[in-house]
Amino acid sequence: MKTRRFCPHCGRPVVKSRIKGYTFQCNNCDEDFYRFEVLRIKDMRIVKQLCQQTIRHERQNGCKLFSVYKPYPNTSKNMKQKEILVRYHSADVGFCREIWQAKPENEKANWLGYDTECGDWMFLSGGPYGYAEPEHSVPKEIEIVICNSDWIEYYRTGNDRTRFPDGFPTFDQACEKHWNTIRHEHLPTVGKPELVHFLEEVKPDNLCNIDNLNWNYNYYHNIDPDNLIEDGIRVSREDKGDFKTAFLMHFDYMGKRYHIVRYAQHHSMCNARWYMYAVVALIDGKINGNMYWLGNGLISNK
Ligand SMILES: [Zn+2]
Image (cartoon, rainbow, N blue to C red; front, side, top):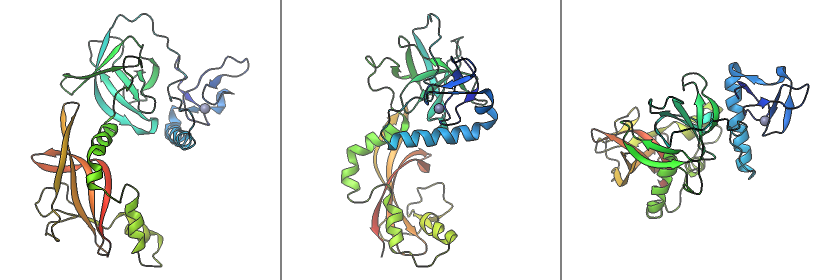
């Protein structure tokens, strides 16, 4: 049931209309459209923006979240497969999904989508390089075998919520879960949105727009006395007090090791200093970019 057309209101894929005179319908908005009203593949940028807006709106207003895939009925014939081996390919944030590659021996589908909102697995037609359009939901009987990049089994999940009530934790969810076990020891007062807030307090008056943005988001330097941070466009190597980088805990996700680290940052236009908490992977013992940002803890803004 591929239409390659999208709802102009919510950005979700439309299906063929059952009402005479109309061509398409959106199951999410419960509305029917003429051919010229709907969005096409060439409008994909708008479609993704709409999808993001819709999902944000639905989340904020506590609506039941419909999958961006939901309009597609399951048309799969009797599948003989009992399991599908998959490995992670990429995140498609605009559509709130991840793209996974199925092990080639499955002749049916090479690509699967994982809906990060609903936790549903979906067959995709075409690969991630074009528009990977959802074909239908993975039948409940089939187990999804999450593998690392070498096809070594790591975790089993599937669409059957009685057997797999928790679905599959995304990387973000895994980071938050482990962070929650130690965050009370490390982040007593300041959390995620607070950094800009305390920089506002010490911001000079009458900055123009650009300076305003720079003040809040750009004048950050990592303090890295032990030379542990690899990506260092803006790194102060000198020791500004005792702001050593600390490795707080580690965990494994899909067979790879990640570390929760704390390192200090300072603002180059004032004396504000804070700790940055993040999940990182190490390459040759060095921190090579943040994989996931956990929060900030204020040291001082004086
Ligand atoms: Zn719609």
